[in-house]
Each structure stands twice: as C-alpha cells, then as structure tokens.
Image (tube, rainbow, N blue to C red; front, top):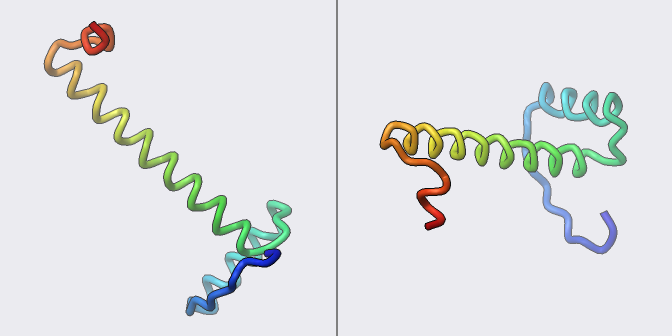
Length: 70
C-alpha cells in the first residue's frame, strides 16, 4: 500500500472470506490488489457491453465503421 491513505470499508464476514480466498488463489499481495483487479475487470466488461450495443445499433441503421470515419 505504500504511502497511500487507508480507508476502512464495512463488508460482511462472508465477503471478507471470499476476498481473502481470491487473494490466496490468485497470488495477489493484498486485498487492495484484488479489489483493484476486480474494478479493472468490471470496467472492461462495461466497455465491451457498450461496444456491443454500439455495434448492434450501427448494424440496425445499416452503418459500418467506415461510414463514421468519412
């Protein structure tokens, strides 16, 4: 964690257990790293979902990517 300020977050004992298990199974140095990785993966998923929605709308309108770059 270095020189970063630390904040306490209240979570259920079950969630703490799952986070600790993930930390051990995946080889993370800290639960902080587990949460950071989870946030990155969540953001990736949201981006891919938005991208898929965008591609679907373009297809519905008969547009191709090239049409947007002209």
